[in-house]
Amino acid sequence: MTATEKLYQLLQTLPENQITEVLNFAEFLHQKQPTTPTTKTIPPGTLTGLRGIAKHPGSTPNEAELKAEYTDYLTQKYQ
Image (cartoon, helix red, strand yellow):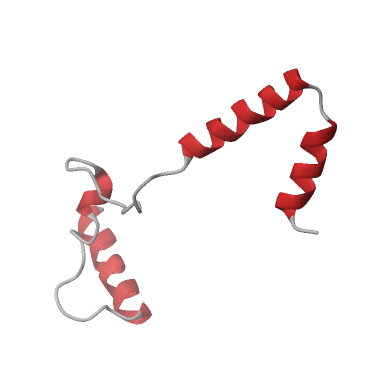
């Protein structure tokens, strides 16, 4: 038995006021569904729009290079 058939059988046993409630709920669910496919757009001025702005030029440094760079940064900062 499909969900549609089961729902139809259940609706036949309900009183009119409860059928109206089920109808209202179904219409509510129908209105919640988007009519067109949604595409994620990033609104201008958001932080997510800045994604990638702080990337290193060239290739991504490996772990040893990152540690050396951070060590140099700390050495310069606290001299």
